[in-house]
Length: 406
Image 1: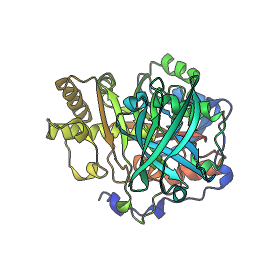
Image 2 (image 1 turned 90 degrees about the horizontal axis):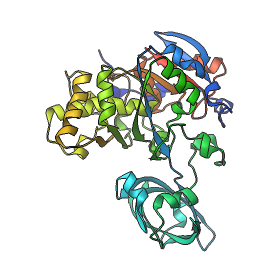
Image 3 (image 1 turned 90 degrees about the vertical axis):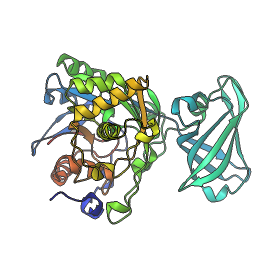
């Protein structure tokens, strides 16, 4: 009998994580972190630089190439109160690339720190951008759950919203690091292959990769492909409900090129995923393809994967069949890239379709990411985490890594 994910008690995915085991800063050399190898139930350890030797020759590794934006903006009211505006996702225009190119005006869904001190009126700040002195104004709009619509405007047609974030914004490092962002984080909290601006948290499994590791992968004829999932602040959202059915997963935006889809098909839809964000995107692709097979004429935004969709629709479609459905859909609409969103929750009881191995860091207790790992290794997560705690592994975003092969 398969586990019903809705009935899972999050308290069963708890473990004691001492504060000193949380890596506050990364190692000086990214690829010198430790690597735990879990292979068919057996555990060993190595250095991350040795990762390629554990991957089959000719296999396919998929990375999330999202780039973390400097999403925290600090304004000071005339009263002296400090207000933090944390940009979560664009709403006018909704497309990330278009929003970053906006001049004079852009709107975002934001979390607001010290909200009680910003009841009304606009916030403003004088800043120098590209040699121009501009005034950035923020006006608060309606609330959306715990977030708010915020309209940003500025008085210069030469300056884009991306330019403003670059100068005025602060990189949002994870809250559990319990420290301020430092200048070094601008480099260390980005993967070496980050390209597409939009995340408010790094896809941290990728932080270990260096050009040296990529050279070793290439020498072993291992293919590398990229996709994009913009990581939302919801990735840090703890599960507060007793069972998973009451927990609402956050929506994240994905884009996958037709060329990447064809590469996945060429590799028989069998992939080594770097990070849980790549896992969520790849597995969502299967369910998007299944949706297209049933409803060929859906609009792109209707391809969104709902939280429980994978558990509610029985599907006999093969993984390559699902990916082929997406390629055909793109061809019919003269599109080169799939742009949609996912709310997928991967928990024990989930049947993995595309991902055959995962490179991932060590996650927080009682998190949805721990559920994802447990689903992948058939409940054996405790054995891995007990080993990591007993053998001096460093945890969370700047911590060590693992390779999971069920």
